[in-house]
Length: 91
Length: 209
Image 1 (cartoon, helix red, strand yellow):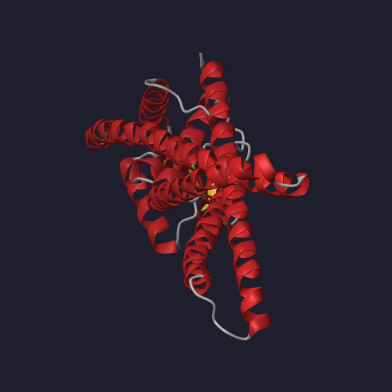
Image 2 (cartoon, one colour):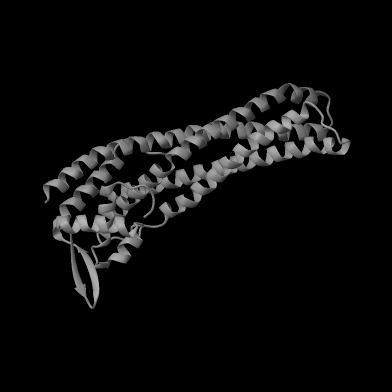
């Protein structure tokens, strides 16, 4: 995903993408992050326990943990709610 | 419920895409009309090898305006290109429709944050162009009536086409500007509400350590 996103949106994107195990390179590619920023965000999520890192067949993989579920649920609910409220745009 | 949200999102995105296409068409027609005006007025000057006033001043004015019109056109094209990425189907989430809808909302928000500035330019550009063409149409009314009374069918057809084009472009310009403002108002409200959501998400993250 491209464009100006907030930190919380980037975290949401990383966490939903990492529901299946992902390498660091695939995460930064998918989330359009540069290496340093990607490292920072992934480090933060690892620190929070929202992501776990493990090695599998020589690859370092990241996976979203159960601890991230409340964040993902809250994010989804809030965004769906803010979208559903108010008038929609129509030609 | 979630299907309703997805349908609403899809409809909204289709509307915005149509608005961008209308904007590009309007800008393209305006550029074409500007070029036709320049060619029509420069040709006699080239033939006479002299500068004819006030046509030369009008040509300079239209060329200056044409540069802005062309920028307006390019901005629209760029916006359309980038909006195609937003419109691409969601990559498919394990949790299905809810996450696809959330992804689309996040993508639209990111797109809006990126293009808010250029959208203001489009609003101004289409409004000014619309007003210009409406004024131009108004100024042709008297001439139109005089030709209707005494002109040849060819003259009548020619002036009618010119008048209609000006009128359509004028109305389209004002309408496009109004619709972009509505789009801005819709997404400004959502961005405002997302800031409140961010506060709660921040609290959730702080509390989770």
